[in-house]
Every structure is written in C-alpha cells, then in structure tokens.
Image (cartoon, rainbow, N blue to C red; front, side, top):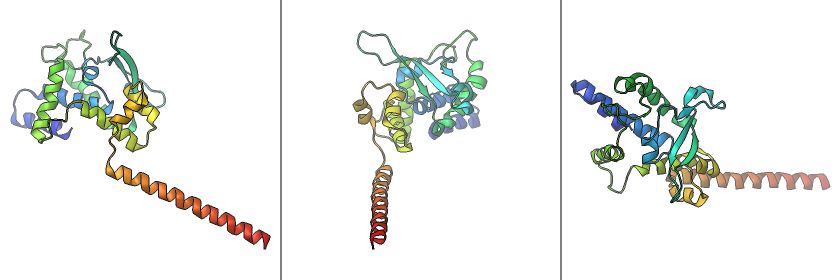
Length: 222
C-alpha cells in the first residue's frame, strides 16, 4: 500500500499529470484489502454502498460496506452481503473519505454513481484493476503467483491473527462454507507461536490451580 502512496507523491513532486488516477488506484487497493473484496466487488462499488454502524459510530457513514456484486452461484444473480469495518483498518477509511469528498468530484459528474471513475467520468474497467495490481507487483519484485486475490487472502489471515472468530470472518468475506475460509487462512509463524505459547500458559495455569486445590484439600483433612 505504501508503494501506491509513494507513486502519488512522486508524480506530484515531479509536476506530472496522472496524480488523480494514481491516488484512485492507491485507495482502491486499500479498500479491497481493508474489506476483503474480490476484483469485481471492489470495481462495482458505488459511493452509496457505505453505511452507518451504530456499534461503531467512530467510522461515521463508513461503518459498513454493502457488496452488491458478490460472487454468485452458476445461474444465480450476484450475491449481496454486508462487510463491517473493523478497527484495525481505520487507516483505509481516512483515505476513502479523502477520495470521495476531495478528489473524486474533480473527475466525476454529479450523476455518476461509480466510486472508481476514470478522468472521463466512466467506471474503470475490470482489466484496469488487475493491471494496477500487477504493476505494483512487478515494481516490488513479487512472485508472479501473487495476484489481486492475494489481498483478500491476506485480509482473512489477518483477521484470524487479530483474534476474530472464524464464523465472523466467514460472514465478512461471504463464504458459504467454513472450509473455504480455512483454505484462505495462512497465518504467520509469529501468530502460530503465540497460539502454542498461549496453550502452554493455559495448561500451566490449570496445573497450578489444580495443585493449589489439592493442597487445600490435604490441609483441610490433616
């Protein structure tokens, strides 16, 4: 994400054209990751696809994102779902607000609902979303197997690492089966180490409590 921000700063510093599309692309990538969205899900977002979550008033009108073009079963209409904004992703909300309120109005007509529009005010193409990610992947020297969907995989893994329950994560990303969510989960070695450490601490705690209980029983019977 930082690489995308750097591109905007570099264009502005050089006085070249293209700062607005670069800023749009940076925010798009942040939104895709921060709400765990697929390519077409993020591409088809409109400015009205955000709402207030009374349980998280700090996010204002960006407390929940409504996906209208989720992946559908064959022969079925697009699947809808709502994705709650989580506190760990509040940095993405800041960028999104700046795009919608300050930058987007410079290139979009008032009657254009599309969240991500070109300088001609049309909705960006699906291929453009992929090309943007691929450009950054190349610049960073990442493996070719890393694709746009990797942002969604990272979202799932990070939510698990943050301690969110698997069922919550499943609902957030719109997986019908929990087994699908588990495939996406690639938690870090640090997280796995913490899980094992916590398990040992729980076992040690139970042993201490059991020992104390047995000692009190012996004292009471002596």
